[in-house]
Amino acid sequence: MPVMRQEVLGLYRKIFRIAKKWQSASGQMEETIKERQYIQSEAKTLFQKNKNLTDPERIKECIEECKARIEIGLHYRIPYPRPIHLPPMGLAQLQGRAFRHQEKLRKLSKPVYLKSYDEVS
Image (cartoon, rainbow, N blue to C red; front, top):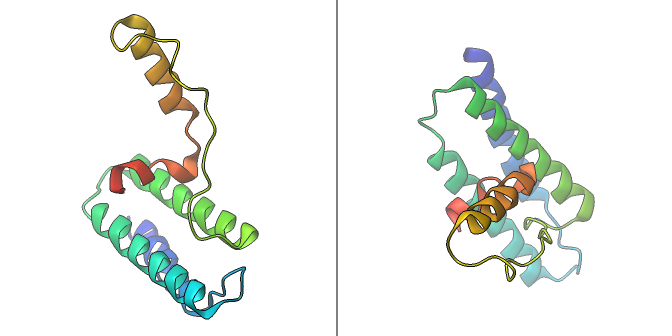
């Protein structure tokens, strides 16, 4: 457990170091400030939300999500989560087995870097 704690604290520090050095893709100072504030507030919110987790598997999932979001943000120079494109649920009725099945498929198809995004937003 102490190893995971050190890894989580290291990720937290890494995120704030990234936020401090962050430059927006547009190069505009207003955008840079806005994106830096978003990175910091998103990190604070998610880490606060998950601070009481005790299940090692759930902690590992959160660590993997954090690493994925860091890598994607640095690669694409966009701090916001990338949208996912799933087919609309227009074919399923709003109740019944088909709707539940489609909801389950949508939940399973969500990428690792967006697992906690809907819970916070």
